[in-house]
Image (cartoon, rainbow, N blue to C red; front, side):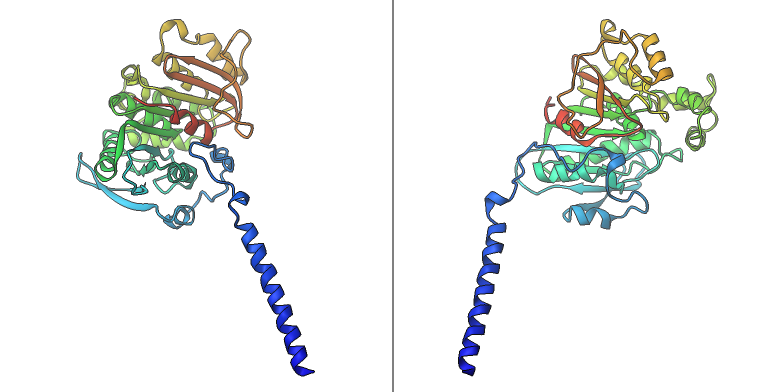
Length: 358
């Protein structure tokens, strides 16, 4: 009797084990797992404001949780010999790969976690990713699109070209806010490098932005400008001249012929949308430029004015992305105005960049 009970128990255990193994096998069947296709949208990510990760006390550990292969590297500046940190990813495959240079925003540094989706894209699509520090937050003279900061970005590109099999016809740069401003400055000073430049909510002219910010409750940025440029940038002063040396308005005439994607929120009260429109106007022929009265109306009323006719919807924006209100394309330059604030969306950036090649 005891032996019969033991046998019955063993049979029950075996049946449980068999059912459990069957369930595990069913869950691991290829047809039950969604396979990522190269170039597919990262639908789990929308904008930097909605990124689920923490944005304070950012650390390498935050990155390692999402991309274990990410490396913290050090690059020696060819301008002053200082060592500058950066984050770097390369699969190590022998194939020629695009290079994605991502620039942190105004108040952050190279560990900025909202850039993680860009690195995830690089891993899924076999791109090389680098996020340089380029002298850190924009609070000191060495930072804020200075000569040193721009050279750090070029040094980062050259590091990648010397360490990985980079396709020179597919080198991209992307940033938002201060990162977008620096991306445009870097593109203007080194236009031969880039196959695509993405700038979300960029500052076009630091002198103008300083004046605008006097009337808004974000004057910390003005203190940063004073620290970096050596004084209050009143027109005609050395500080104003220094601010212009760090502004896209001084260099964008050199970028004609380089694909540029500009995007701005219509209700952005930190950097008003006319900064992106002015950048667009500088990059395109006069016949395609947006008139001043439309820019003034947009900034004042925070909506697209009547008579400002665009090209229609944007194929780069999906249902989860900000709502597109206006698009305009001229040659290789794209302008998008969306209903939103001071923000950046991942998928439109990556979808647009994926089409760009020298």
